[in-house]
Length: 104
Length: 305
Image 1 (cartoon, rainbow over the protein chains, first blue to last red):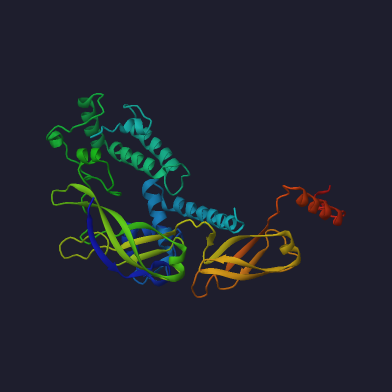
Image 2: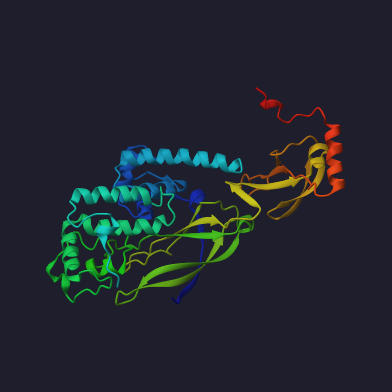
């Protein structure tokens, strides 16, 4: 293993400073935009904007979109099943956060 | 090179039907998928299961694998015979999805070809300290990047990146470094690099979003009578007033002393009452005096049925 390069990069906080277009979010998830469109149809991802070309996704949706597309690919889930799994994850995470606050 | 028994990995006999292969994979995938699994080593386990499925789910690939397996017999060391796969042509290409296969898989089925002209976006996790988020500033992170040379030989290269950590970054947030992902082909732009930020576990402080929590032991008399004590805070210590009649578990809030931001988070000190040990006679006498003074106190009165 050898050292490749030293570079200095400007980092942008995805959750607070970025909005994705449909294609950008697809690229970040490594999937075709049509996969994301199926999730949008299920209400599992909600963009702002009226038409496909105007859609903008809050940066904070990136982890959700990545998790959803991983599950679809690896567990061969359809969009409706994935939407249900995401809802359950939301619930688990809320419960875990509550547990952490209680020092658990 | 190690021969991979994909049937064994999925718990199947060689005569398994395509349906059985699919069922076995899905069951194991739900067990080991890093997003849902609590198993230790889930990620590595899942990778093997996924690779086995990728080889067996496609009848063309499966036939090629079976042919190699027959020649190979039972030895664990495997060398692909030269030109062995000239009789096969894979309609699906070398595979899609995660291009993260074992050497064995790649020797059989080739490497995943780059499908896009533009470079792929890459993702990695980085660990920072709590103080990095309080202060921000440049931090050097090391990433291991699988890189292919001109001959297509894969090796891990260490890549050092200097990243400006924004003040107030929170657990689980992502940083995007534009153009630091996979290289583009020809004149196409490089992909971006996403870094998922996590904090090294801290001995004292716990995090919940922007809020920071610390356990603060106090004496019984500090809790009962009130006191001003020194409490640890991520950027140094703070003076904290314990109100009289505090009980264990009481949360004292230091507004704005959590992670920076608009608004900044709060720092919570959670009181726990520490009892002095009764390990000599004067200490035991002191406890007996206390018992005498509080003869009517019953901490279990709320438990009575």
